[in-house]
Amino acid sequence: EIVLTQSPATLSLSPGERVTLSCRASQSVSRFLGWYQQKPGQAPRLLIYDASNRATDIPARFSGSGSGTDFTLTISSLEPEDFALYHCQQRSNWPFTFGQGTKLEIK
Amino acid sequence: QITLKESGPTLVKPTQTLTLTCTFSGFSLSTTGLGVGWIRQPPGKALEWLALIYWDDDKRYSPSLKSRLTITKDTSKNQVVLTMTNMDSVDTATYYCAHTTIHSTSSLYNWFDPWGQGTLVTVSS
Image (cartoon, rainbow over all chains, first blue to last red; front, side, top):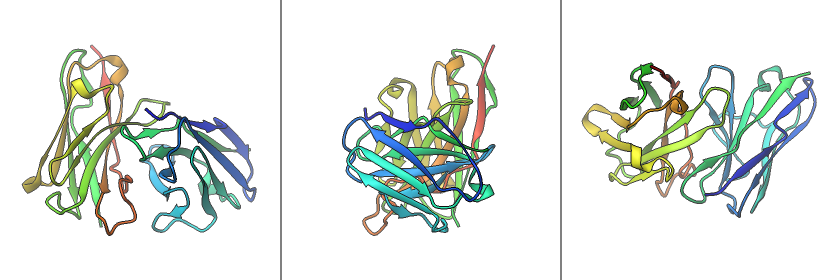
């Protein structure tokens, strides 16, 4: 199965800062990589699909890039509501797999 | 508007069988291209995909759990049921169901959107 490795595990930043989260796949997933945001006590919400497409109602400050094995999620200017847990997921091969998550916390 | 909600026991004993029901609205699993998946998340740990069923009754399972999982659908009730046998403490997790599609006209091909609120299942004697 494809292993997704997210880095770093935790990021401490301030509102207004720019942040880039990384997700690396153990083998190529083409562009079939997505990102989810999860706030405490809530279900994950799809942010980005197929590497760079924003899901419905996702603000433009969220962007995704990458292909093959290396992907990034960028938040251009952090809002208070963006401090959450972020997961990447691949749908290229069965079984679908998730990364271990990156926690974005307020500095 | 698509919504999903998980239901089932909050506490099961080791070796018992867990049965979870996902009740959804806003779509039908008789519609070509649609599906429902199950994903779980142990406390403080990563998400793990478990199983998925499509409108045509095509079923997919996580290889590591395949021997313990069964996914079925009841189209008339708008429900998907997941059973997991021989429960153990390591299966303690929040279990989510989620909508997906493999319809040719959808850009969200095999992505999970939206998700249910999740249900916490604790395995303990």
